[in-house]
Image 1 (cartoon, rainbow, N blue to C red):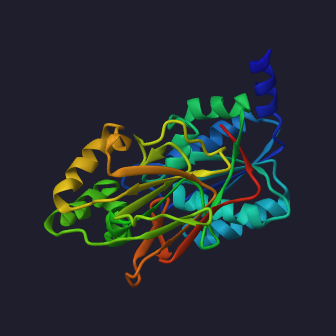
Image 2: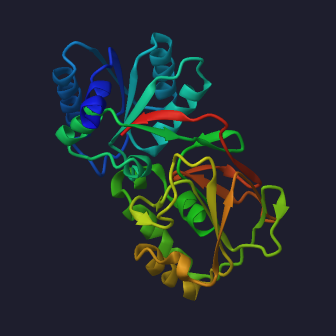
Length: 310
């Protein structure tokens, strides 16, 4: 009975709007346009009584504009076919709209953190079946200096690496582009230190690197905090007190084996508000795999949630 109710809910969309970022994940899905066309065809077959609108965009600015169009149309479901960056821009516009449609993410980017958090399959037929189940998921967005993001932020070795990766490298090499630049950290000592204030209380010790996690995954598939959920109205702060060059490979191994939190240099805090400062000028901040800007940064949970179909 419950599955029938979910299926009925997932079949009730009268207007579906698909936004596809044609620049997303080119190295991962070389046939991404063809895949999304098959997705749209499958949606039109599965939702034969619904209107399925499809637009392709080349830039984040175009994605934001088309999101406004979808919200003005008051569509029932807005599907983002792209990566975390595209989803971030679309979600920001949805949050600013007086009308907020239900949303879904079709993974077509380099990492697809949010799609992975929501357990959305890559296979088109499986994805549509999941959509038709109609299971809803509450997602609380987050803000870094008033700019929206959804899953993860980093200040330290990861944001340094992300800042070194050029867009052309990301498109050509995908995740491997980050590993190429990570190797440069092995050649020099890490001297950076950051001061944290969590929910108004300043931590006594400074951190050499900081991860902010709203979900359980980091860098796509690495499970750092199993109990973390995008539906939480708080987030987790992981601090690493020592990141010298000789320890960097140790942290990488702990990360890929899901045991980062077992190291004594790693501390975890729950928070709704976080402020990070440093005496370092112009040190970069990354959110969902893209550079947001520089320190200082204030990170907070949004007051209102969004509804995703998963």
